[in-house]
Length: 275
Ligand code: MF3
Ligand code: CO
Ligand code: CO
Image 1 (cartoon, rainbow, N blue to C red):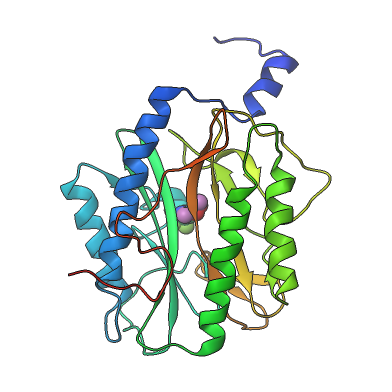
Image 2: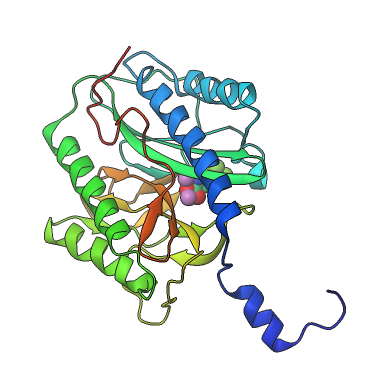
């Protein structure tokens, strides 16, 4: 359709798109490839390895499978993946600095396969990590699962936010407000917006066929972030540790399907590497 768009059409366009069985099948394939890339990364994260090396690994993996890393050149982003270390909240840019024993790093992979986006991130331990870092990763993973557990037809986005926020805050952690989950499919960032906290002024009813990410960022300290001068790297203002896990999910007739589950069971660190 072209020419004049009525207000009603504009409203519908702004709504979260509903997808059918073929889209779900394509999202399963894109999601599984993304999860395989994260499984591969688990075998390479160790002290001395650079995030640039990990970036190349995912680029080559994608290319060999006929996929493309969505972040690369997305709004000028320079790399294939995001690597966010310690107090970096998200969108850390891979570089030639070696990872150090005790670091915790979020690696966020988005692969486009046959036009569909699989978007997932996990935390990784670099050697032995401090107890408080392990605790934060455990809490953040549990927050992700609780958020996904709230996804159901007839539910709403604020039920996801409530599940995440109430759990994280009961553990004396804070939920980042400045970044959110998002609808996706053929588009990387689409409606609906998935907030990881309760916002009464924004609440979208969940319907079968919706596709989106749940990707809570949880801090040990205060929730506030700032973006560094590279225009991407977001860090905690108080330099407290931050963690994040992300899955791509779909709302089904009866509940939720997770597209990005690890084939190897590498759900949460430390990963018991199968070589
Ligand atoms: N994968 C991130 C997300 O979860 C987005 C990264 S976009 C980039 O939405 F440009 F920063 F890479
Ligand atoms: Co995402
Ligand atoms: Co992501």
